[in-house]
Length: 124
Image (cartoon, rainbow, N blue to C red; front, top):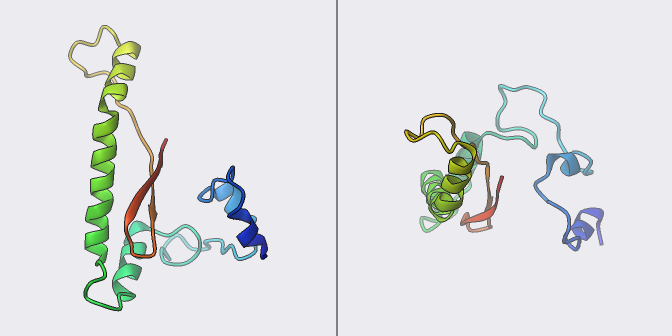
């Protein structure tokens, strides 16, 4: 089995972790921030353009459809977490009756499968 294939058997490995991936044999470091479609850190626009350029049938989703699906996953994720987020805010700012003192930044990791369906991996 290849070194990359053996990583799939490690249930404790976070496959999207840059610190791990930068050590991979096929890793390509980005050299120019203007080239958003080269290397391992690509822009969302470059990924959606790649999806559009590589569609083989009309049934496959467009980049715009994939983006809409990603947004739906994010909205549903936020709706599922609204009560814990609100509770965290209220407990850290109990005297803020106007809800105006702070905000919460969340990172949402999304996986696209081979059919470009969006799957929630985790929320940071």
